[in-house]
Image 1 (tube, rainbow, N blue to C red):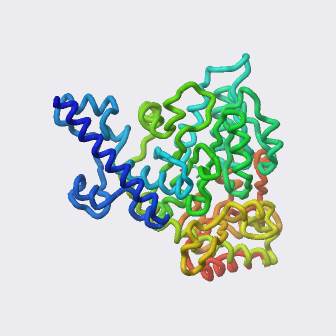
Image 2 (cartoon, helix red, strand yellow):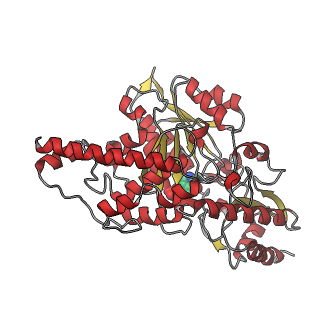
Image 3 (cartoon, rainbow, N blue to C red):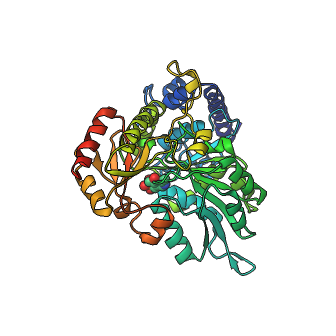
Length: 463
Ligand SMILES: *Cc1c(COP(=O)(O)O)cnc(C)c1O
C-alpha cells in the first residue's frame, strides 16, 4: 500500500469511530450529551494524553508527517484541522456537541459551524444566499423577516444589506400572521428569517407553518434561537433548515466572551445549484466560504463555551422558574404599567409559545415526570411615567447588572432604547414594539427572593 492510501485508510477508521460515537451519543439523554459531546475516553487516550477534559489547543497549525499527508489534508481528503482559521480540535468538540443538542431526538441529521460571534454567524449564513451582484429580471434579491429582531441583526439587515448592497428586506409586521409572510414572498426571495422568541419583546410564530411555506417556495427558513437555546426549543425538529445562535448568551452563561454558532440540517432547501452547499451547509461553510472570510472562533473561547453548555438544561430551568416568579411579582407592582413575559397568560404570544416551549427531557426528570412548559429567562417591563422614570429605576438597581447582555447566570438589565436597539431610531423601535419606558431583564440563577428585593428597592424610589 502506498503512503497516501495508508493515510486514507487510517482516516476512514477514525471517521468510522467518530460516527459510531455520534450514534451512541444520539441514544443518550440531553444532559449526557451536553456533558460529554463527542469527547470520549477513547478520544482522550488516543489523541489527548488521557486528559479528562478537552485540552485547550492554543495553537495555529497542525504538523504533517510528509508531503503526502499534507496534500491529503489540504484537499480535505483526511480529517485534519490544518490551521486554526479553518478548524481546530476545540472548535470541533464545540461543533459536535451543539449539532447533537440541536438535532436531539428529532431524526434530523445536523452539522454545526462555530464563529467568533452571533453576528458573524448570521452574516455568514445570509451572505451565502445573497450574492450581491445577482438579480433576477433586473429586480434585486429579497428576504422576508419580521421587524421584531435583535438590534444588531436589524442594523445588519437595514444598513449593510438594504442600504449598502441593494437587497430588499420585506418586513413582516405581525410575525404570527402566516398570510402576511406568504404575501411577501416572490421568485426573488432567497430565504425566510425569524427570531424565536424575539429579543426583547418575545414575539413568536408557528415555525412548522413558516417552514412549510419556505419549502413550498424552495427557500430555507433560518431561525435565530439564541433566546430559547436547545434546552427549550429545537427548530430543526420543527422544519427549520438553519439555526443561528449568539452563543455569547445563554450557551456561555458565565459571561466569558463572545461566540456564535450555525447549525443546519443536511439537505437544506435553497434556490441554488450548489449541491455541496445544500447537502451539508455547515461543513460547506466551514471548509470554503468560512475559510476565506476568517470569522473563526478562538480555541480558548470554544472550551469556555463547551464548559458552560455541560449544565445548560438545569440552568435554563432555574432561570426560567426565577423569571416566572419575577414577572408575577412585577405584574402586580404599582409602578409598572406592563410586563412582557411569555409565561404570563396575558402575553400576546403565550398560547403559541405554550405549544412549542418545553424544558427538554422534563418527562425523565424525577421532579416533573411530564412535559413541562418553560418560557426562558428574558422578560421586559414598562415603568409608569415614561422614559425618565425608567431611567431612574434602572439607575437604582444595586445587584442586577446594568449591561447590554442576556442569558447569564447573573441577572442583567438593559434599557433597549439607549443600548441594543438605539441605532435603529424611534420609528423602527415602535414598529418593533419597543417603547422608551421599557426595561429588559435577563433573569439569572441567583435566588429569586434576592432578585425581587433589588427590583423592589429600585421601584420604590418612584413612590
Ligand atoms: C446578542 C444577539 C445576537 C448577536 O450576537 P453577538 O454574539 O453579540 O454577536 C444575535 N441575535 C440575538 C437574538 C442576540 O440576542
